[in-house]
Figure 1 (cartoon, rainbow, N blue to C red):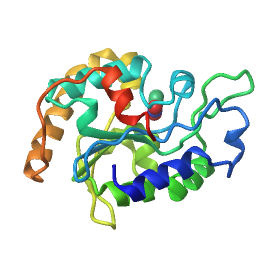
Figure 2 (cartoon, protein in one colour):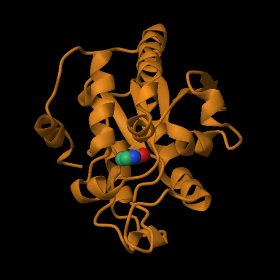
Figure 3 (cartoon, rainbow, N blue to C red):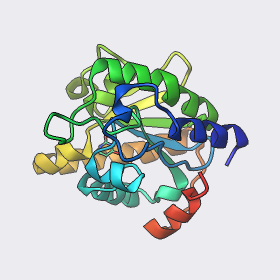
Figure 4 (cartoon, helix red, strand yellow):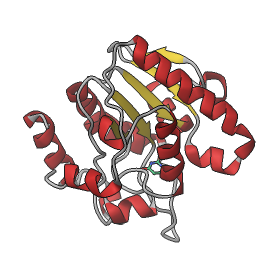
Length: 210
Ligand code: URA
């Protein structure tokens, strides 16, 4: 990993800048693939991610892995980040959607820096929350399946959150079509892709040193 990104990741892991530090087990900085590749962005870690320290390790993550596999991507070849790095909890210690100020604070503090190090060929936002971080007036129902471009020049493909698909399984074909489009766009942007599967244990060893 790039030295700057490694240093940034250490800083992220030590962050105590907001109240989300109080109820977290650990910070979940994300996992990194090569530079100039694909970057998937979710909203925030949930219960499982907070425990394991990796993004998308629960049921949503399993569906995400399946969708990625369908277009010949494994976790080692891409980056998976969240806008918010610590698990937001409700009064019963359940998962909670991050609010606007948490998104803005954490996203501006860390996510942009990660993206500027990773310089992704294509960013994919999962669900309305991460989309809204980049485009506050955008609605996922309108933007899903489309490419929007950030001022910094990064193309962003908006799609649904896998948790939404798990609740609305009649959308699975549309979701699959979105991933086919992601694959096509990625090739159009000359992104490199190494075909092959990697197991979660390999993924861990890759990120262990962070
Ligand atoms: N949902 C997200 O948005 N991110 C995760 O890491 C897990 C679930």
